[in-house]
Length: 196
Image 1 (cartoon, rainbow, N blue to C red):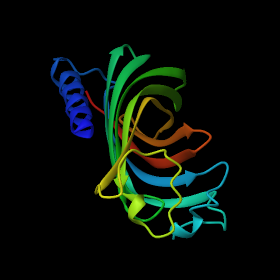
Image 2: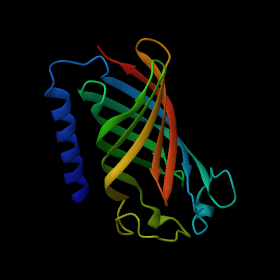
Image 3: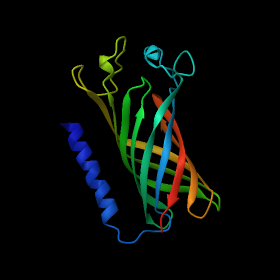
């Protein structure tokens, strides 16, 4: 029930951002990124055997397959924006997972070819229930009971750093770093297209 209410609230924010602006700024953009690489700074010793795509014995690095789509609306020049992101991917246990995010972003620096933005905002992370996996050690990060199909975690402070390299007038190569220290950090790579 709580997950449904959070999704409805995120959808309302998304619709508000999309439909309250009648003018698209030159910097407004849509993007798609391939997801990615999960980094567990302290390793995942208890649950490493549940991670078939780990790159090391202790689960410090795990490949995740999936994508995230985004829309970014600049509200003050090319300095401040609101960004909406939806992702679906195969999580560290090779099960379906994803997140929904809406956040405020600010420019850290920008040159003709390079830009770095940072952002923060509420994020709903969801995944197929790991409590159903044999050998799973519950670290109580995610909500849900063993009979639920899904688990979720809601963060008020989910954030990102996005680096963009301009390839042409409208197209940028981008990489996103999500700094979820100490539990999980992630990298993803993709493209964004500026609208005008």
